[in-house]
Length: 242
Image 1 (cartoon, rainbow, N blue to C red):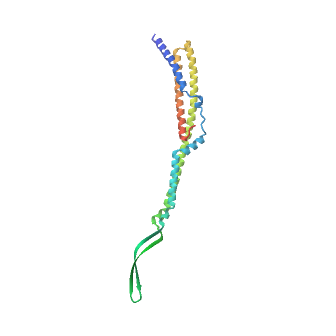
Image 2: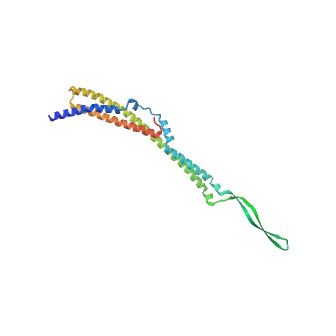
Image 3: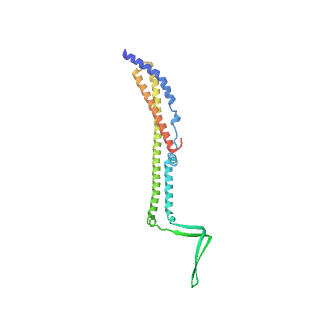
């Protein structure tokens, strides 16, 4: 009697839960057009990611900074050469001497006048002469290092896009498989419900098929979430939606 009562209660719970649960699954399921998305060509996605990725732009600016520093080092020798000019206006004391052979007469005159001077200078510091070659070599190496880091960054981004692109395609294929499995499980469940109502199969078989349907619905929802996540991550990498 106890076993029969348990079977009857289980049957009532399953029959009462099926319509609402099926409606919820149908309302959240993706349509075929949602899962069948045409992805852009892989090369287009890679080019877009390389073009718009902030890390690549940072490396490009870093190269420009190093190139500017190299130009500064190449022109650094000009700081030791220059032109100097000065001018003065005011009251000046002028001294002169007049020698007539017998005596010398000193003359002192005061007047206002404008004086100016102009000249060219050049310095040759020993440190600059000895170290100039090393400074230029270091600046050139810094430019090449910045360019190499940019190439490394670009390679890493290409690899990331390729991996995410393949992962998104895989998730898309999996969601189609899960959707097909879910559809087959629901069709099978409809047949089992009819056979159960007609007394052809026991309640234990009905419960087993119901569990298969629940698992198929859970697997489908998980696959749908993983596919949407993979697609959004790929769109974030390449900088546009598709």
